[in-house]
Image 1 (tube, rainbow, N blue to C red):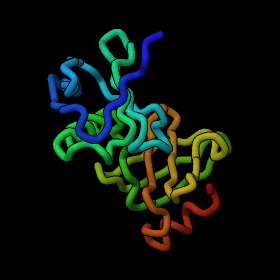
Image 2 (cartoon, rainbow, N blue to C red):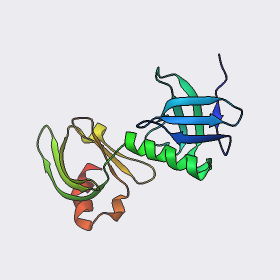
Image 3 (tube, rainbow, N blue to C red):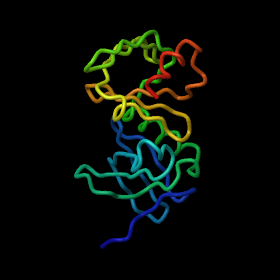
Image 4 (cartoon, rainbow, N blue to C red):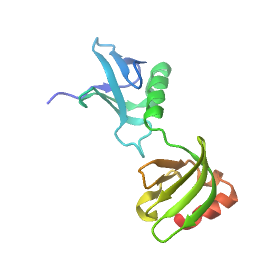
Amino acid sequence: MTERTYIENDNARITRGEGILLKVEMYDGRIFEDVEARRLFPVTGVYKYITLLDSEGAEQAVIRDLRNLTPDSRAVVEEVLGEYYLVPKITQIEKIINKKVKIIFHVITDNGPREFEVKSIYSDIKTLYDGRVLIKDSNDNRYEISNLNALSRDSQRLMAPYL
């Protein structure tokens, strides 16, 4: 078994390649080209433990904590992760219609108005320890309320029965 390569502080320079691919130049001379960044813990580990995978899905290295990288490397990795994990942020809830087999949300997001269905409030709506609310629709799309308390009182009132 090979030892895991960790990227931390300034032991590597990370630049952008084609699309969402990255190039990693380790300061010990190793180079990893065309790797993709994926969060090992996508819901709770926004900054920590980012794996870098080659085209076959094999891990080449792990970033322990994005916040400890050099500013240029951090910006590049955050940019590609943002593209891969595009999750619209709900900024307003216009209405929620509760039918027997589904709940229909009419919301405003940072990417415009959306309408989506949720099958189960128990498995598809999660409140996290940091106050975020994650919602998965019936098509497996994800939405996030970054801070429930930052929503209008009307939006909070509409959301309350589903938390």
